Length: 275
Ligand SMILES: Nc1ncnc2c1ncn2[C@@H]1O[C@H](COP(=O)(O)OP(=O)(O)O)[C@@H](O)[C@H]1O
Ligand SMILES: [Mg+2]
Image 1: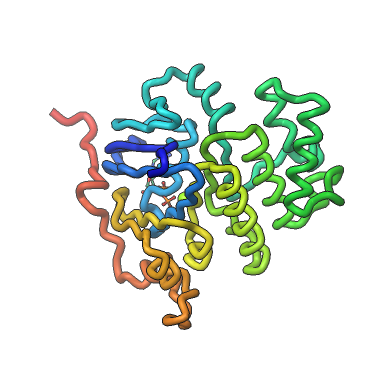
Image 2: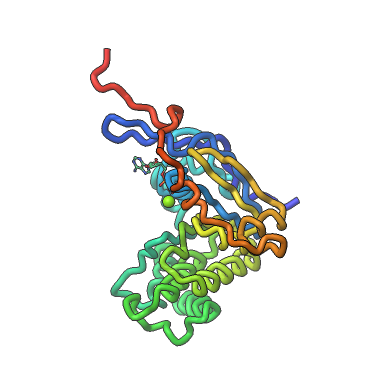
């Protein structure tokens, strides 16, 4: 049995904004092993980004355990969590957040600099990783001189360069056409498998699930379904030979619902100045 690098237990996140309380994540328990690549799917607003932000140590959970390499993120203070995040976690978000005035190579080196692991050897590793990602002739270009797919590849290199245990990606293909999206996710999957990372990708494009080993579907802040069988994942991704029809995107399916009625358990209005 593979050892789990990442394990959450009953994780809950409640946002309080104005007079509303929103339970964005509601008792989520998941586990990810070494070399395992997870697709996290679900309709808009189901809590995927919130879950990822907690796993990235960017957001405190309201309740529950978030274990990475046996350490609970939710028990750390801010200083400990910041250090842990820099060393153990790599992430890339939809807006890839590259630093506009740094070159592709410098953007990747930045992660090493934060860990005080830069230097000649670090620079060479950054160049090697970008080369692996097909960016060898773009090392010294600024982000604005790169295409969306190239920027996303730089972001992936930046997420992996410091050799983290966990790699998280939120909608990494949102701004890419189908061909680029496939390339980027294929490379991402290969690196996670080769380097034995625990990888999680949030995506609303179910076709991208063909690259993952397990699909976790969230609805209303909860895990609604976990799909581990290859055939079932391929059917979901629309790549199964038995199901050549394309599967509608989950977001589209939910948009056909006539009304969005907040679930009382996840959307609890709070009275102000009550009692
Ligand atoms: N900073 C915030 N403050 C208040 N509510 C939020 C905040 N961020 C997200 N939410 C709410 O939490 C729920 C889950 O959001 P999110 O995690 O972004 O879902 P997803 O990524 O699946 O679209 C939604 O109802 C959203 O409106
Ligand atoms: Mg999101």
